[in-house]
Amino acid sequence: MEKKSTILGGTLLLTAANLLLRLISIGFQAFLSRRLGASGLGLLQLISTVGVFVMLVGTSGIRVAAMYLSAEEFGHRRPGGVRAAMSECLRRGLAISSAVGAALFLSARPLAAVLLHDGRAALSLQVMGLLLPFSCLCGIMTGYFTACSRIKQLVAIEITERLFSIALTALLLVLWAKNDLRRACCAITLGSSVGCVLDFFLLYAIYRRNMRDAALPKEPLHLRKRLLKLCVPLALNDFLRAGLNTAEHLLIPFGLARFGGSFDDAMAAYGTIHAMVFPILMFPAVILYSVSDLLVPELSRSRAMERRVRIADLADKCIRMEMLFASAVTGFLFLNAHRLGVLLFDSASAGHYLRVFAPMALMLYLDAIVDGMLKGLAEQVSCVRYNTFTSLLDVLFLLVLLPRWGIGGYVFSFAV
Image (cartoon, rainbow, N blue to C red):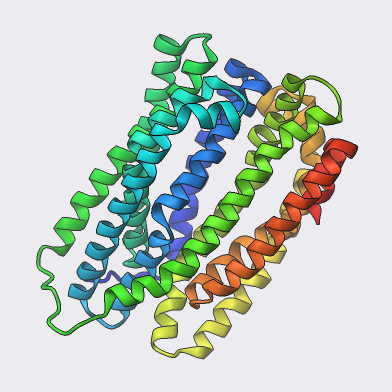
């Protein structure tokens, strides 16, 4: 049942697909920047930040748990155990995400008015809440496909979903939203959410076909206990990190506005950094995120079989190659920042900020690899500890420095 696949082959395939998807996303982001403007992108980025938070609350660590449990059962050659683990994860995921989605739908208007300070975001939040269960279940299904090395199927479906989402979003922007920012943000949210619905049903259909001959195990697998042991630290990590990250994003435009200038100018600066600069900065990191995702099942299998030499060898090679790669990317982005900003977004400001943030790729890329290693080695508590500390530090610096130093305070806090 488990397909023979090397981590190198899976990484290359995932990387090629993710590079294509990121290229499409950057091109689409350039289209949005011309249609919405920098301040409109800032509002969209705030909506997306809330979306990431509710998505993580909705899954509550179950995506990584599904990947980990499926990989363990595959490692023990128990197809029925994989089926039982996925059934448990899907049931839990549906219950939690439905409750979170309903809460978001009902509280969309006050959240938009109080947290985002823009009532135009309410419609987007309602759409997000309505379709949240599909987004969360889709994430759980990708965990299964990654764990059982069915990368080709996953890649084909994700490319299909992304192209469908972009086409639907562009159609809604042209025919329905036009120049209305409220409708434009809703169109983008709706296009992405409907894409997740399509993604989930395609992945689930293939999963059911794969599992039709897998008999449920007769011996107890203690799945609830194992799921709880994995999900509690993962969910705590996600809640704390995403909650603090959301607070950080909400603080940025308001702190910049307090430093001086109008709120629209602050939103424009925020939109330039997060919707233009960071997509370019993190574009090469798709290679590392592919490795990180594949390291979780690979290391969990090796840990289950007590292959300590394999674990040490993988960790050493991945960190060495990551540092070489990050150094090369940093140099390229620093030297070509202005050209990239003007070419992609017709923005000299984007080029200026890209040069400022380029050296930080060294640590950002390392974090991507180490995060996957810790999850694969069941060191979720360590993730909680380190991520909570750094996120709290971020928020503290932003509260103190943004009103005094403006963008300089944000750059400083980000670097630290």
